[in-house]
Length: 202
Image (tube, rainbow, N blue to C red; front, side, top):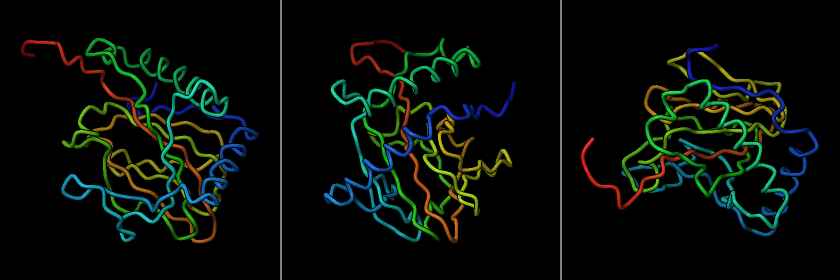
């Protein structure tokens, strides 16, 4: 078992399902339901193409009436359970769950999330994050992966592959731009469920 805490599930999504998600995303682009990729600067979302050059669509993960959403949530849930089995101490801390919103992202050639970053921060949205997840939705053969400098690992973009990793500073990462190819991903977070009525010190 790998000890770098980066979980991989090859072909977690079928090629057909990945293509359906890409088609759905392209429909959102045509409808104008997308926005330029944002980064957090001084705890505020900011468009900065020097840091992140992408097209993003924010969507609700839990939507029982839509099989496209339900499939993604179900497969992700199964793999989060597997992550917990591999790293059992995580399950002893606090309950955690999929954050209700996620992103579909498109990186055109030369685009990417260039800045090394982690998924945890002290703003209201990111301070409860414990894990991050990402599905690659298409194959990218000319670079286009994701680099984890501290683990000296570069993930390859292959349609359907799922990765889950800790959200903290230990797992900083950045995109590797493809000079010639488009990359699509679905990505989001797993948060600790914080009970507002819970009292006491830790």
